[in-house]
Length: 149
Image 1 (cartoon, helix red, strand yellow):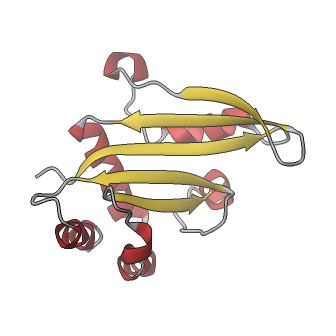
Image 2 (cartoon, rainbow, N blue to C red):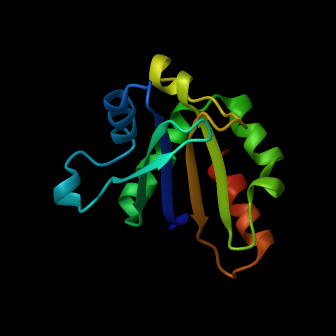
């Protein structure tokens, strides 16, 4: 059963951060052969609030297999209390287009390979577009509950 239509992953790399480590961690969410799977990591350069350079990495996944692999990682690696927190907060994490947002702490992921939710901006940001029929908020909420059980 299709659970999500797309998953977008975004992460910012500040000038002093190890960009190679950030990209390698990002790739852990992606299929092995990016070229063969036609998955592209977009790289955008920007200027941060402190006038220092920032690189924004973004990936959009739309193939069911790729999205399901990430959902499997969330089910496997997110601790039970973190999954329960996502379900408790689903009203504030789900928007009108049925995009469900979650952030994984960047330091926990980079240093310990640990999946830990955060509300801060120092994170790997995930936007999951929920697949549901009928296209109603209650149906989307049910899909999310089942996703993290």
